[in-house]
Image (cartoon, rainbow, N blue to C red; front, side):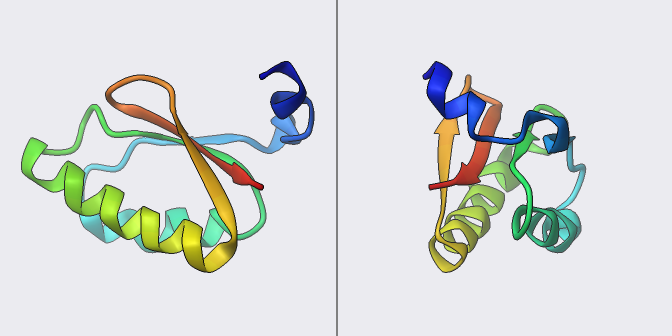
Length: 79
């Protein structure tokens, strides 16, 4: 795991804490070039799965990867 973080460019990691699904476009735009942490602790429970579904599609299209850090936090990064 340590090697994974060495390759992430950690100075560029931004934490996104969306409140609505409308913020997914900004999150995906950032993910195109940089790793990010997605914190879902403030989004309504019924919207969490939808946002994760959208992000899963984005990581497939952008050739990225995801790692769950805990139940509300996910790290998205290049493969």
